[in-house]
Image 1: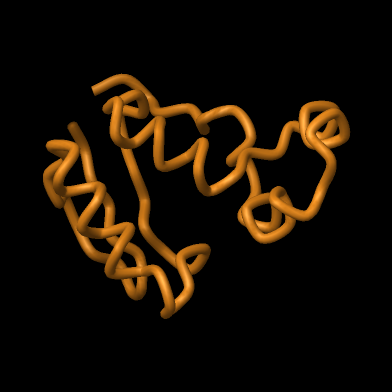
Image 2 (image 1 turned 180 degrees about the horizontal axis):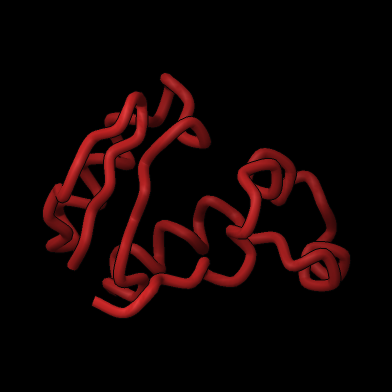
Length: 87
């Protein structure tokens, strides 16, 4: 498997926490992705790897696990609080 590169806008976990609070033009300039855009990418099986880790807080962690598995990703490994999936 070739090395994975971050989906644009997901290079840091802070972006997901603030993306919905930033105006769309500024969000584009800062290269932030919203949770809705990330969910759409996962549903479309765009990324080769999905890591459900510390960025998914307790309120939506199970939802992210379910949507990742529903999109056809398979669990490769669990490291601490992070679950690593591949398609």
